[in-house]
Length: 305
Ligand code: ADP
Image 1 (cartoon, rainbow, N blue to C red):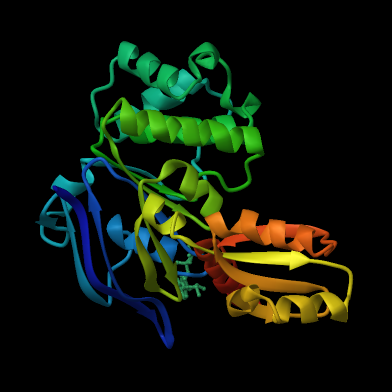
Image 2 (tube, rainbow, N blue to C red):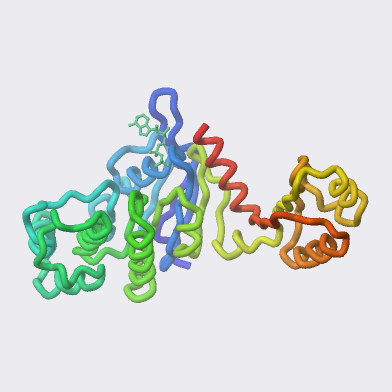
């Protein structure tokens, strides 16, 4: 498989803070690669190094199989990115903005091409509207349009759905899928929301405190057989004692007054359910959670506190 990005032992320190800590990862051609981590995990810092906006303290980045340090311009020509909220001229139309931004960045963009890109990002019908009339979601999509002007092979998006409503988020996801499936772009997408990455990415890493914690194919990671299943009931010692003496006892992860958490595989859930009903145990809820989800929630909560 052709490697598009190869990050090896990348570290970035600010005074006494290590923002990125010995990070390694590979992005392959055609990937929609989810770069997932809680706020402050080091995602933007990594992306800034990928775009040569800041210098690594240590480590190596190769993009398109070339060293980023020594082939900077050649590499950056083939990357499209939105890193911060894109900036547009509000009093000019979407079309005019792209035309000007195209000229500034020195790429030859015909009117047809601009209209084609506006069509791709779902803004064709608004080509002649002033950008100040656009919603946040439309501006984000125009930002992606701008990143596409020079027909890049690799698209880097840093938290592109921040601040969008669910509909706006879905439009960005659909656009990412379209760029990947129909335009054969490789996409590097950072996010702090597992669910969002899960819906579009084929591979991902989870980083925390600047270091890789989990890496792999999204399907494999999320379909991992083990679930934590929380069974909730009204505070009741009797229920606890029945379950503690049953065959399910070995699956117990933890018990409180009003809930028991089990380690189960998904095909065990109906059996547990049957057991509870047969023993007249009234439950309020049975909530399965995938172990990855639980793990991510855990590091997210810890990083927030
Ligand atoms: P993320 O994008 O995952 O939210 P960042 O890469 O923005 O995380 O930040 C990682 C860590 O590095 C944070 O603790 C942040 O405060 C710190 N950091 C980022 N940029 C700077 C900087 N210019 N100077 C000092 N610390 C920084």
